[in-house]
Amino acid sequence: MKARKGLIALAAGAILATTGAAYSAPAQYGYVNGERHERIGERQLQQGRALIQRGEQLERRGYWKQGQEMERRGRELVREGQRRERAGDRQEHRDWR
Image (cartoon, rainbow, N blue to C red):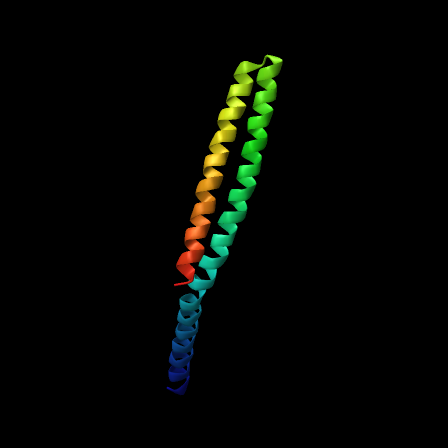
């Protein structure tokens, strides 16, 4: 009987500890996630701008199709990077409330 009560108490303690850890994790995770979004966004902006420049160089050399495709991909990366940066800003502002 004592062993059974001990196991129940141990299980209840484990549940409470897990719940406490899960409850405290989202606030910290959100802040880190916002910074991560900003870093990824900045990197995508840089890569997108580099692709746009490379596409323009290819077009000047006469490789229009490849240049246009590279510019299109670069613009997509720039848009995605801007979106991620905005998402990171919103996430950080939400954490300060």
